[in-house]
Length: 303
Image 1: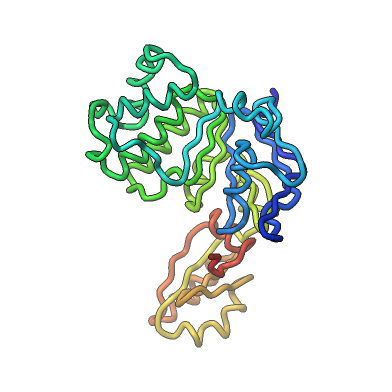
Image 2 (image 1 turned 60 degrees about the horizontal axis):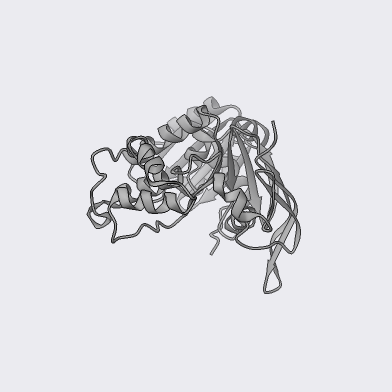
């Protein structure tokens, strides 16, 4: 099956700073591919290059068989985009926003109207078709933005931090909908800062840093390859003194704020030792994708 998106040797600089640096990326059709990275890693620029919104300094982009940006208009007819910031028209109702957006793709009114019940059900907005945009909550607006991206029944959907600002119930509703899309054979390209979201949804993840892919694999593969299987988070009175002997029990330790992260293959020994330290509290859990992300990209803030 032909890949819906192929990036080869892609590079882009701004003001002498290389933002995307020789990037190679090829999506598998019918899968969810995650693009993760700290702020400034090049994720948004990569998406803009892939959509033909900007041109590359070097390299090629093939989107649904069309070279970008030369044939961007043709390619984007079967592409859906959920941007970071909602751009709904506040003067229109929910239905009118969907109708207007559908017409950008050359769809006829009756064709769009036929899809509206499905889109509203998908986004949990059934019964809101005639609601003014300003009457919707922030979560409803975000879900409508996702529904709008599906109006043209796209084959490839770009999701740029789709659940930012949503409460847990709304996030789970969108996750359920995205899994349905994958089940229907749609291809998703997801950027997110929620590692649990990436771990739940993505079949393949590429981690970007400084404009390059530094690792690629399934969430389970990345966890197995790059992190110890168990993590013990330790905090409380006496932590400073206990750090001195932590290496006797932990394979690797990192400090973040007032918490010591102990990475180990033998958590029972660590827990047994901590039980004899009444001033210390701890949380023992399996390693996850966030642990991998922080190990590979660091714990320092990126602005």
